Image 1 (tube, rainbow, N blue to C red):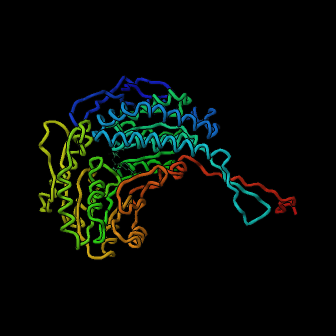
Image 2 (image 1 turned 60 degrees about the vertical axis):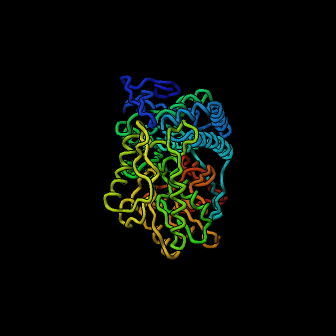
Image 3 (image 1 turned 45 degrees about the horizontal axis):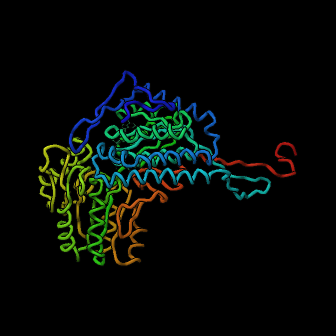
Length: 488
Ligand code: NAD
């Protein structure tokens, strides 16, 4: 386990050797003391990234950058089980989920290696309305990128940013979430093994409140790519407005899943569960609002309750665990405040709530509330835990209206046996990701991001690469005749 920051290609002790405790959420044991970076450490990291960008790095070919990305992926693949265990300890998620995350992160590096190669010689001729000129579009790396990630998929969320940034020829400083710093630090190991030039990737762990602002406000940072909560995203955006920094934001959600009468009930029950209980419901795109059509409501909820109560809760390292602890004590407290509010205000609890089965660990039960008011915080606010709220509807129009009635617009799901209806509803949903007869499957190749307060910009796919590229027009005067404006 790493106990130093990764700056300019080397492992560096943080200023004053400061550390902070890293806690296993299943046991509450402090299993490591991670390096706590300071504003000065951030400055060193940004200076290293800036110097690397000005060196030969920004002139490397995509083919050369692809080699680094593939070598990093190979190192991660070799260490798959070590990384998986570390992710489980740090975040709490069940081992198979953590393994899936790491495999996806490896796939992300390989995918962007391919896209890096495609960048070589990429230039698009633009048809102009004046044939005295010829114009083409070229792409340049954005410069120094600050990459700020959340704790729900620590290694995976970092891969969504590091891999396209390196593919584009940018340099970067990664600031992982405070509560889950461990696997993100491991990227330094793979960068060194791959001989990635010093300063291209720097990693500074520590408290967001201490190093967040110095990082995003550093004058040599050209781009801020942030994934996290709306309040922090909003702060970053307003602060970056001072220097007109390029900002992309992946924020929260309160995504709906609509189940129509003609859906396959068993299939829909499982996807609804996956949509809110996977990763302990700590998923930005989690479908936390269920809209079920009146005709199947009773039957659907009966099956949903039966299956939900079968979910095995436990330590992520224990075989068979399907729901691990929440990531931290404060996260559990925050989610239980929603549960207590629901119970205290008389919202019907179908199942779940607090879990007293363990002496230690931040565990709770998968929880379902019925029919909160549309203005109730159970229905309107992001809970970021395994808590589903359910309402019913009569018509398709009513379902769409209820689904879209949110400040968020990250994702939405629709379950129906009618392809036409699914397509119509997909068009009508105000969200960046629409799942049809499923919920949550995420692919590196497809764009990821939200409408409304769920964010600005898209990650993954070629859209994710564009986050780290500047678009440049190169326009040439090709007429044999002089311009003839002043000199007739
Ligand atoms: P958070 O906003 O509390 O923290 C995110 C990151 O920002 C952390 O690394 C944190 O240390 C850092 N940070 C804190 N203060 C900062 C500051 N002033 N300047 C810069 N950085 C600062 O979010 P979280 O609790 O880690 O993650 C949960 C949130 O992330 C949820 O709202 C969830 O919906 C969202 N999320 C969104 C996506 C997506 O793709 N849209 C994916 C995962 C999580």
